[in-house]
Image (cartoon, rainbow, N blue to C red; front, side, top):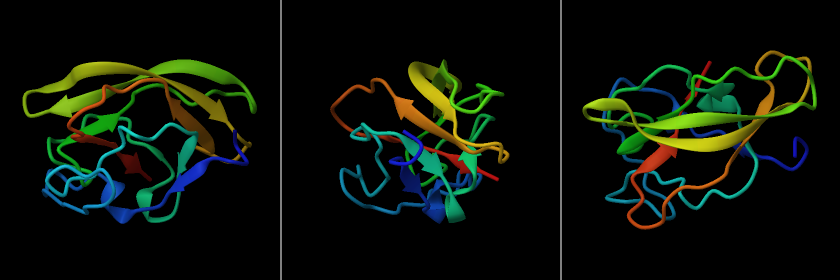
Length: 133
């Protein structure tokens, strides 16, 4: 999982305080980014930050309509897989929807982890994962 994970490197993934950034891209909705079709292990790196955002972002942050974030801790031990939850932040609710994901620590480096979403509903895609430093 750690070796084959997709790197999320896009700067729009950072929480931009609801600045309504619209990066477009494949599967975008009204030019907001979409991660509904992400069915692989991924990690945050480069301009996207070095881990998943761990506090509730404002609506229309992170280049998307509905930003995804998680308050789950990264495992303490390398190679350990834990099940956790991530949330969809809407205009009036930080945890309007709750989904499951897996997290694996990949090395002793701080925040070096990969994530895998188990399920997101298909249809109009209005959400993407947020990163942080």
